[in-house]
Length: 517
Image (tube, rainbow, N blue to C red):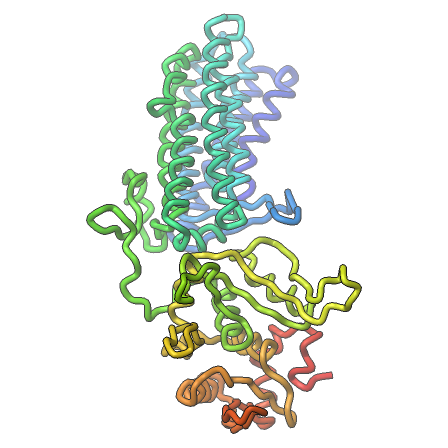
């Protein structure tokens, strides 16, 4: 149903455009009006299901681009905001089409005109329901092309052709500015998928957010005829009046869509409560952001005792890896050894398969790169370790403040356990922790915890017992240097319980850590 409401106007446009001579003027009018009417009905049903029943829908039609650094799919996302715009687009365009039946009576090439109008509505639906910026750009571009075709509909008039070329040129300028926004966004988060951008963008540098927002707004200025890229709009009056009605509609859609795009880029909007979408529709938000101080700068988080929210699987992975061999490192340090700038996640491991497995979790934080082998295969030696690190990101800097503290005596950062570890650790975290820094022992599993204090180890023991119902003991260990440390041993009596928790997240090459052959 959801895909049908998008493509019905496009199919009606294709039918009227390619088979207009066969079906005649009335046939083209009937097909396009019927397709818009059916699309409007389906939009109403979608509005009820998504808007009132609060059940967003995501549809993936398949892969579009799949390269080493960029993966784009034909994805559509229907949330409360999208279906609201679908209602406006379909019903208003349907009324315009009905009016056009009488207004264009006796005009030449009626079939072509109705084909343009129906396609205009179809690609507006593509724009507002796209699941990533690339698919949105497809709808955006087709709207620009159809704008040119509508304005120069009376192509025998020189002024109409000039007006169409002016609109096309001005829209191409806006498209170039919008493309710069996509480049900046991809350079920052390495993806153009809405869901990933939504998760990561609140923690990006404010300068990057400002640049992306200004480029998005600049692209919308050209498409929606805002100063100073508005000069094409008066000349569009060369087209028939109902086309002007359509341009007023597209100005409305694109203007508020640009506001929403900026809100999305900064994760200001939170369309989860009923009715929020109606408040946002009439709220200009270009220069609004998260909480700012009296000088307009972003205010830092006041309570740093809470781990910043990330996607559940990514957060669970980070917690498990930080309990194990993973580390958060500053990319730059000052003369005293303290970190400056942002933090990156790094890990070294002996198994290439496991390294590739964990990269699947942290792709939103990193470039899609392969682990670095050591020694380098060029030397002719067989690699025994693989090293991987992410890009430096503000969100990881905030995580670093929870998991590390500065030790003045050692002149370095040491890893600590957050006080709310019980809320943070998940089954995925436990599985990653075992694969990272655990090993099978007497049909049970031993977890290495030498880098933590006795109090922190006791806290971890109580969390494993209370949250996961495991039987855990604390084992003393004396290293070769005489240092006394402790490890946690998950008893073989908890074997079945442990397996039920972590096996869904284990890869076959790491099952030996659970003593499974």
